[in-house]
Image (tube, rainbow, N blue to C red; front, side, top):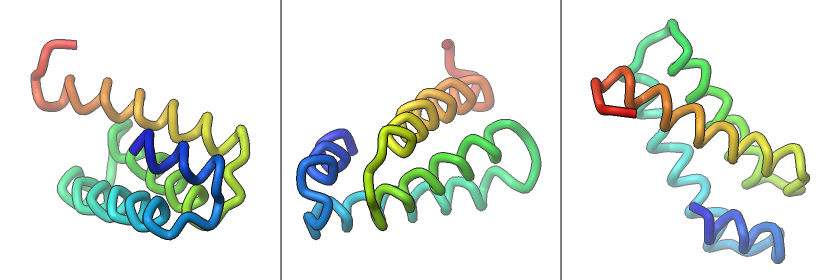
Length: 87
């Protein structure tokens, strides 16, 4: 994911990077379907999917980059607690 986002930052029309971001968003949608409708993790997944969709359709602004970064942090933190992994 970091490589794809970096490529899109430098080359917004990079097809392979857009495909990678789209695939990641699709995987997260599947995780989201398993999570259910409520809760912080569901909200964090929705936000991250939205940020990745924005990255794919461009332009890749500072706001989008920040949303991806904070979304990855939030999902990682929340998934650890819901899966009983140590933080």
